[in-house]
Image 1: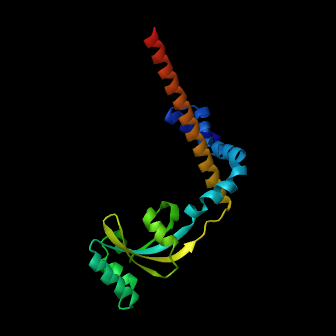
Image 2 (image 1 turned 45 degrees about the vertical axis):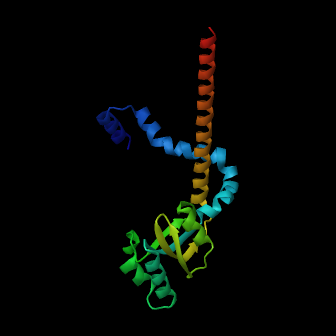
Image 3 (image 1 turned 90 degrees about the vertical axis):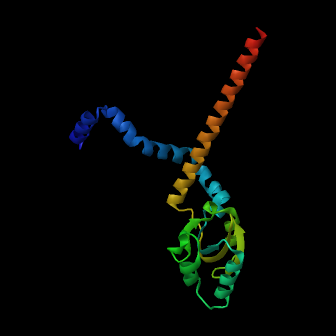
Length: 190
């Protein structure tokens, strides 16, 4: 209520105007994004969709290529399950989750792993590939295609807003640098 807001502002030594500015900042920003970038959200989503699609996958990593190949063969020949191998032999934190990773947006995954996952069928175990000093055995568990719902539309507007801010900051910085260089040249001539 109004009285609680006044008491809180006095306690924190801020004005009610400042409190309201801070409290409403996100709402104002969201409204601005909606007004300015809503018309571009669909096309931005389509450009980014491949990176926004989600995946759950399983991973086993070994530093020794021969061990990785042996484990891969044990899985494809059904001598052991992927989960058992991951729990007992993987050399990463995925040991805790029996090798399972995700859901994760494809765009946030290591590019080499992402490429293998994009070209894999669900449930198909891939032979070891070398990435960052490890030999990794991968398997896609399932895909979750990104959808342009209200939450995603809001995210796309926020991305467009951030891109717009970044672009403007870069342009202003470049103008200032150019102006500084021009002033330096002018001083040298004098």
